[in-house]
Amino acid sequence: MTRGDRAAAGRSAAGEQNGDRVNEHLRPQWIRGTGWRRAAASHCCARALARVAGVAGVLVLVALALPGCSSWVGNLDTGPGTTTTGAVHSANKPIEPSSAAEREHRRILASYGGPYRDAKVEAMISGIVDKLVAASERPDMRYRVTILNSPAINAFALPSGDLYITRGLVGLADDSSELASVLAHEMAHVLARHAAIRENQARKVAMLATASADPNDTTGALALAKTKLALADFSRAQELEADAIGVGIASRAGFDPHGAPRFLEAMGRFAALRSASGTDARSLDFLASHPATPERVANALANARNYPAGARGEAPYLAAIDGLVYGEDPVDGFVRGRRFLHPKLGFAFTAPEGFSLENTAQAVLGSAPGGDRALRLDIVKAPSGQTLAQYLKSGWIEAIEPGSVEETRIGGFPAITATATGDPWWFRIVVVQYGDELYRFVFASKTRSAEIDKALMDSVGTFRRLSLAEAASAKPSRIEVVTVKPGDTVESLAARTVLGGRKVERFRVLNGLSDTASVKPGERVKLVVE
Image (tube, rainbow, N blue to C red; front, top):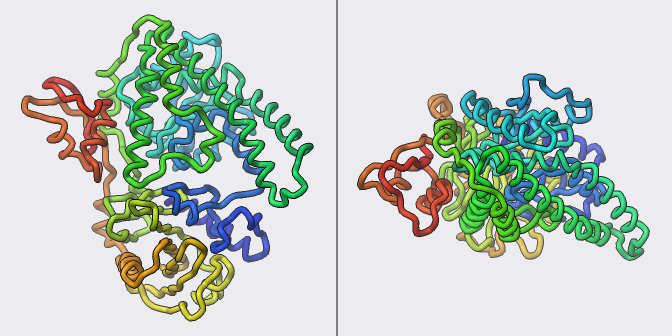
């Protein structure tokens, strides 16, 4: 949760109170005007908490705005991370992007938390890109590579030659050939002009959808669904083409062509682990994104077999990422088990027992196993001249139950709480005023009981101001590369990490180890430490 997103949310909420509303039929009917620009997909019930959409045409344009966006991962994560300026160049002369490309570049940075600066990692990526460019069909092309300061696993490209990879993706890769396969894939999108081709295709599909529109489709939902279905196969074809071109570029550059299928498998395991831990690794628009990982792995393997063996580059890669920040950056708040702490904004709270938390740029999301309970915390600027009671009834939340509104204090701050219903969900809403900002807790449950309500209120009761010492001591988790010693096991090494639950499984995924693989003395592995 970032300060910029919080401010944007406040502006949006204020604008909506002045009559600037979006299409309400595309939102859950119990919540209005959250101001968040991105849908949250922490879990099926979190969709009810977080889905905010625009008109159908806007959704199609968003899909076109970043051709290749999430192309490598197929929207593995719920949204983009962030960066702010170009970090690595493949040539001495930087590209001179058009004003439109530069605006898009700034938008991406604002969406992903800014650029991640690490001289070792930048130098390593620059060397990989230089080799890939020299081996490509267009060695005269200029690329600007930006590392986004986001824990998301993502990579994408702009037609201008701007390539983006997230810090999370760099941490998941195990060697230079795996990262090279990702970068080559994104370069392939630029070389094949997929952006322009996709835009033309989208215009044709949109015209056909309009011409054959169902007069009974008053919301535009059917037209949008048809458009997404028509574009889905086209997108998949582009992804497979980029995979094939990318494997060829990486191989000609001297990298192991099997880096692509290995990394695709790693992503699949990462997604499965997130899903099993209560976090949905797919976006709500996965249908319109990219091929399923098994299909891509099979195609990547088939392509790799057509090329000679190459270098994996494991040792230099691990040396470069030793010390890489892993997970959330404390500047934007971070999760520790059921606790969420935000040193910059100076607050903390603990989720109910059994909940898994996820920090996004727009909100903190949480879900319980089974998907029958969820939570969302976001922040908006307090409207001038409104009491908490007036704000609660201002229209951003609907279906409030009569007689449920109650003023109270949480963590020493004025607060107000109420309950609401929206079949099949029951909601507990709590708004805490902290200075000139409102912290909005929304809990959702499919089952209503005094025990559940108490657990939710107890969670809100943990909301408190961080001490200066706590805020100053918050440090990011980092990757530490260690050498396996005699007697070390997967379990003993995993126990040394701060990866949260399912440590052994997370350790295996982070290091590309199968479910049955063991570690051997002398091998180098990644740990996540504080």
